[in-house]
Image (cartoon, rainbow, N blue to C red; front, side, top):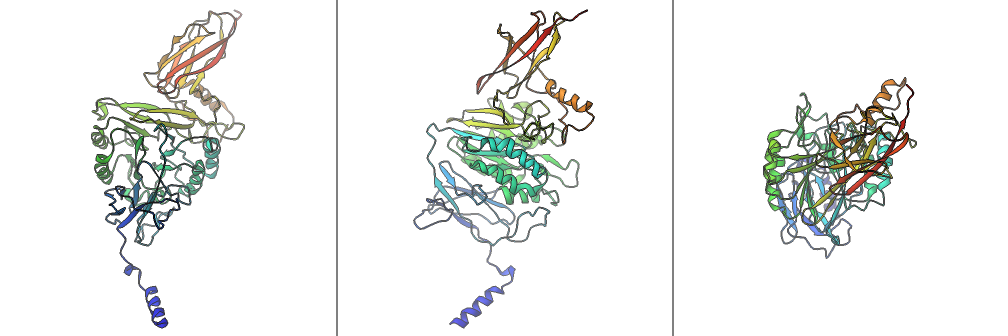
Length: 526
């Protein structure tokens, strides 16, 4: 008997790779009551849970079992239902996906997806108590864009560390360009981000590609290995989130990428959207903005096709990154949206600001103000029951965090023609934002919205231009017209001396925000 067993074991060990069992095309979703990520005795299967390979969607049966055609090279993921948490992987990410790689994939510089045994994929869900008010708080990062270990340290000290243990959010989302082409940094930036101890979802950007891939279909293999599927959905009581890779890689072409969606993504949306509740907010997250035009912009035909699929949803918010500036865009018929109300897209400013550029402060962290004058930082999204939401921008390590940056001349000649003004950069402002100012506690007066560069950044540009040596590793970006800048003329007919300038802006979500500065009037000798 023992000899026969030995012969059998030796025979199994010598079975050629091509004779391995076929890949598994089914799995289970179960209630992981102890949260250990393994199905134990007495843990029941969960019916009605959706699992996808990024094209098709399967729904678990009464026993919690699902079946999906095995497609080598794709990523299998669970669509986490509201009211549940997922088990946590060793790297801190939610255990929501598994890459299917039965046969060897393409050899890529940063590794891609390694081969694995064709066993079945099971997902564990743990019931979670709903928030008392039904609200959801989400951290929004865009473009951490680290090029080196030094940049990862900036990201840690400037963005993440100040939030550790005090953010209060239930979910996090990064809107692409996690790194700046060096995919070997994924483990370090993941370790840094997951110190926030909140489920985190990553969307890829144009700097997250395997540039040695032969085509778009293989260009996110390393991203998917470390950070998860490039198309996904995630459900909470207050909102449904859909993340979409919208970078179409075109190796050997100029430009090397364009914004748009693939046919498999449209197939996923076609299958998934009819199952999404319309009484909650639907959030669509991408990297390249939907409003971007030009050679690298978003393909109009893809945008219109997507917007047609969203028209029946009364509560939709679009989130994007990529620009390293910040603005609100309201889609209408000119961009293919034909809904009852304009479709709001919030283009989130970059965590890295202007690519970790500019002079360093006392803590050795670059200023890295963006080209539109917005300081680097992160955003927050609060979603309430019924589809209502609120957005806010938070400047990195800013104790004041007023949301307004002011610029005014330090001194003017008393009696001079009033040709100079105070400028207010209201980071979350748009064309409808009301901004006012007053001098020395006087009457509030309206400020005029202007589309021009922020003078504060123009000053930095001039200092860089006239410096005899580099003031930082990289100089500040060239200032460009801001979409959220206001100007108010400064009077010169007041008394000689110092005068206080107060500015207030009425934010639709946070209410009144205020900031102050001053200027001095001086009598000049003829």
